[in-house]
Each structure stands twice: as structure tokens, then as C-alpha cells.
Image (cartoon, rainbow, N blue to C red):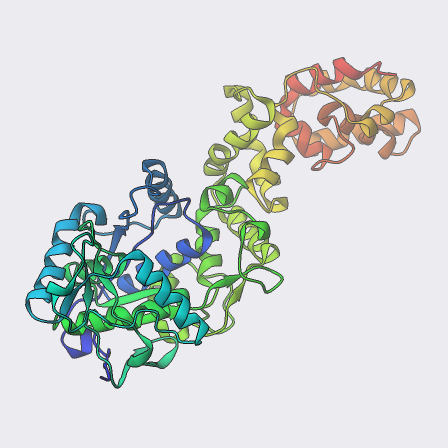
Length: 481
């Protein structure tokens, strides 16, 4: 049997329908997020539908918390889907109905092998180096020969000769000899459907035209193709995308970085930056690196998906995130930075602190790669008095420096215009009157106002803090030894 999977809009399927079908046994990981993104972009690019199916047939491992985490991760990333979410577990009777239909049509059969027999078969097949683990002994056998204590499973009567071929939209033509594929179980002895059966039935019933997923599912596609053909159902087109590898080229694992999408959010990445980054992991459009959502919808198609695994590169992600931070509105960044600031101080930022953050954002965001960077750089603006001093700041605020700040403070208090130009002019005039270089007063100012020896420009800092807060912080440290 040679199966031609070339289907889709050009050959009668009509509207493109894709799906993302995660198993809720854990978090939404980076590879799953990219698969969802590619499915959504492909569907939207072709004016079709993007569906979500939760494959929760493994009731022991599937949890409500994992389902909630997947939905939350997709929503945060901005990957909205069409129609109601399908829960595979709610469709078990439909799956079983298809297995029974195949049985009635002579395309499936009852298998009465005991667990011990199956174990012996697998052991013998492995010893002989055969991929086919089940020997088909109940394929044409009379059920009357079965042991009464063995509940049967239903197996697909797969073709024994020829090959199953997939014209994969990413991998190209791939084929497997049918003699290497055994008769897979469709319905277990307890009446529950298997994953393979459930996936095929759901893809058919949902009208899925394109199955876009990781290439670790490629071997499943052969068995699923056989099942589609056994039911005389239209085949979807398959597109198996190479997996994401870690920076060292090894298969991606937890040790390579954040395990789930929620962790990327916690690390301070923007959803639009992560979308852009995931898009470029295995797909390209010329030399374009920064790709807007509108451009992605316009340009995305499967012919530009590479066949080699993509490598996770946090330096590239940081650079992209920095770009999107710079492009973001200040008011939005204030709201996004607040949770990170609250986490640092374990206290909410008050309205005065929010006002300062808004004034500071234009100066802060060009230097930040992540929201955590942004929050770290902004922390001194919202710190409660008296602000804590770093060891270097404490060293800068010598008795002599503190005395200078005490002499400067009254002049700043009398300043009419509180802006960067006026502040710089006044501090320079003070330094001249003291017969010192500007740095000998600017550095103590920085230490007293920020608690550090490094910050944005000191006159920018004073402008953001405002006259009242600046003078109050100076009073805390004017005579520090």
C-alpha cells in the first residue's frame, strides 16, 4: 500500500484547519509553544482555523493544574484559538465506536493474547532484531480458541505488504515497509481507546487538514495514515518540524534552561519577543530577525521551515527582548515591571513610586534586556527611605563627601526650575565654588540618591526623583561617614 497524503485546499479539503494537541501531563514547554505558534500562523496565513485539543486520555497523569497552565501559557503568548477547546477524554465513546466499526467491517480483529504471551513476543522480536513486536497470531484465528480468562483487545488489521508513504511538507517523501508495522491496538481490554485511535478520530471529526507537529511524531504518522485509510477518511497533510536543541546541540532538556513558558514570563521576557524568537527557531524569511506579528502572518508558510534542529540561544532571545522593551509604551512597562519590583521588596509599590517609574522609564528601557533587568535598574527609584547603600556607595560617602552634600542641599532647595539642565548647571556651579572636579560631587550624589556607584545619569535621576525626594535622600546621607 502506498498512501498519498497530498491533500489540503488544492485537492478538495477546502478551508485550512490546524490544531495544537498538548498532553496535560506537565507545563507548556518551549517546543510545544513553537508548535502552537506555527499551527496558528499557518492557519491564519491561509485564512483558516486554528483549533486546540487537550489530549487528556491519560487520566492518571493529566491534571487540571496542567490544563490550566497550558491555557494560561497560550493566552499569555497571545496564541488565541478558534471554537471551543476539545477535551479528548470526553470523546471516548466516539473513539470506541470507530474501533467497533472497523471490527464489524473486517478491518480489525479481537486479539486474546495474555500479558505473558505479549512479553514473550516482544522479547523474541528484540532478540531477532525485528521492529515488529506483535506476530499477528490472532489476526485470522477463531475466537473460540481463546482462553476464557483473557479479555480481548481490538487490533487494526494493517496491510502486510507494500509500504506506507507520507509526502511530508517539511521532511519530504518518507516511507516505511508495512511488514515493519504490527497490528496496533485500537481498543484496550477494558474498553478504553488508545492514543493512536483517539488522535485519528479527533483529527477527522475536527476537520483537520494539516497536522503540524514535532518530528518525534513522524513514526506515529505511518500508523495513523493506515487508520485513516482503513476508515476511508481523507488524509491530512503532515508537516513534521525538527525539534529544538539546547545550546550544546543536545536534545533540549530542563538543564538547558527554563522548563516551561511560565518560567520565561517569570524571567522577564515579553510575549511578543518570545513569539518572534520562536518563529525564528527553525523558520526563516531571508535575513530578517525582527519580525512583527503582521509580517509573520503575511510571510509564514511551511516551505521555509528547515529540516535541521534549531538551537536555543538565550543571547539572541535577550537581544530580541531588549528591542521589544525599547519599542514598548512606558505605561505598559511600568505595569509589567511592578510584579518584579514587588518580588524584590515584598511590598507593593505606592502611587508615588509608580509616578517616578513612569518618569524614569524612557531612560531605563534602552539599557534593559529583560523586565527583571528593568526592575533591578528601577528599584532605587521606588525604594523606601532610608535607602540601603552598597559597600561601594558607602565607601564613596566619606565624611568629606557627606559634608559637601550638606552644603549642596540648600542650593538645590532654592532651585526654581527642577529639570536636568538646571540641575546640571547648579551642581557644576557648586563644584566650581568648592574648587573640585564635577565627579567629586556627582559620585557622592549618585551614592546618596541611588545607594549604588552606578546608575543612569545623575541629573536624570534627580529629575525623576523630584525635588522633595532628592532633598530627603540627601538629608539621610549628608553626614554619612
